[in-house]
Length: 319
Image 1 (cartoon, rainbow, N blue to C red):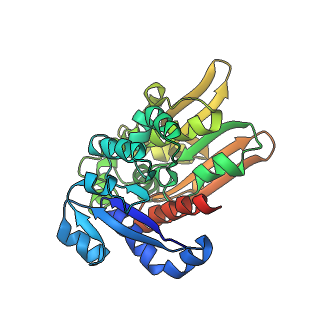
Image 2 (cartoon, rainbow, N blue to C red; image 1 turned 90 degrees about the vertical axis):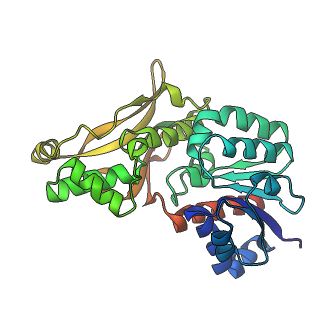
């Protein structure tokens, strides 16, 4: 059987992790799929780094369109991020009749309605497990595992940076700025952490899950946003004294006026499972009418967990 030929856009942390996963687990992947998966092309701004990661058998280019337009690519894996070049590449890949896998929650939250419609028009798959909650298979759970249920609400810790900061503030009584600096030194937070600490990243992920759960268009612009930058150590301490912990939650639910969509710091009783999700871990709690509550827990970011989510996505083509 012909191998599945992959074109990777971006060979940074996640792109590099994807290539390493395909190399390390090649035999197991072939066993499960019934055919091999190989990276035929990759685009990267740093060709030297890309060659170290991909080896000499992969055709490399600095132009993403060389990958998107290549005949020896069946699936385009977009790991660039942002909404400029990434959007152009994804749209062109779909128009070329190629399946697309993306980890780009910002792209989907802001332009997903347009892109999903285009994918349906061209009869190709647009898969995005890696865009939400890293290695947690929450997208597959919402689309398939809970398909017989009417979902009532979703509440999730879906930004590891913010959760790490809140966990450290609680554990050590540290000030917000002190823990933020620590998170940056450890590589959990960007030099400009606004996207994470003000809730935008969580809102992107939440809007995608909400659309899947409730069958609505993606409505990122209607999400209420409040981050954690105004929290102080005494806020954490007072919550503890009252038997609560503060977590940045993304919450979406059915209500009388429609679908509620909000991200903000939330008081959670310390005995609840969500209250005990610490560090950079993620967790998503789903309330459904038949099964009741189910919770999904695991690493929400990083090379290996996100690459694992990409592998789950690729396997779905042969399920």
